[in-house]
Length: 217
Ligand SMILES: [Zn+2]
Image 1 (cartoon, rainbow, N blue to C red):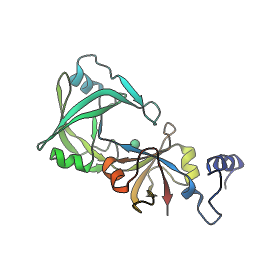
Image 2: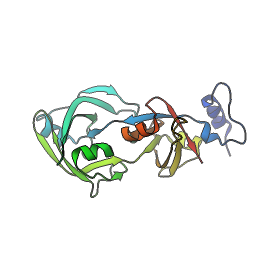
Image 3: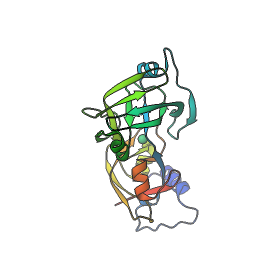
Image 4: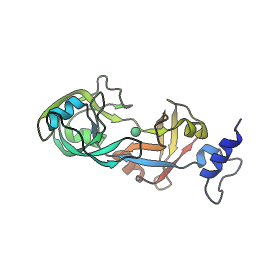
């Protein structure tokens, strides 16, 4: 049963000229902003100091859409058995555990096999070497290809009719007619509504940050 308050909120989010009919499911009419994640690394404070110097604090460069998260001024070089990727952006703030997130194309360039995982699921993931301006850190089982996911608040989840952990299908635009399967829903009070994919996935679909996608059946 949809409450009146929820219905009001829903109406505010619908397009100015309603294009949906009663037959269409409401959730497929709600635009979800795309956030394309370029390769990046989250660092523990211990690793920040190993890479940039004792007592070092990350310097915020740009706020991200997710509240409290920022792209830092700092970058690292990533080294694998087959190659090097320079200027990989550090995202802040510091986290309890370091995690490097790269695309499949990056895996080939580095010569490593990072598994597709949800953030934080690092068991038997890949290795790489991070090089900073002060020192280096050898990452053991801390490299993944992030599984595509949607961040959302509990309110958004109610609106879209989904729950935390659910896997949904996302229609990623008409140009390539590409539907992403196995998209994980991640619900938290702190999250802003955003569909996160990596650069390989975005390029395959011909979509960019700031555009919108829709859930599909
Ligand atoms: Zn994300």
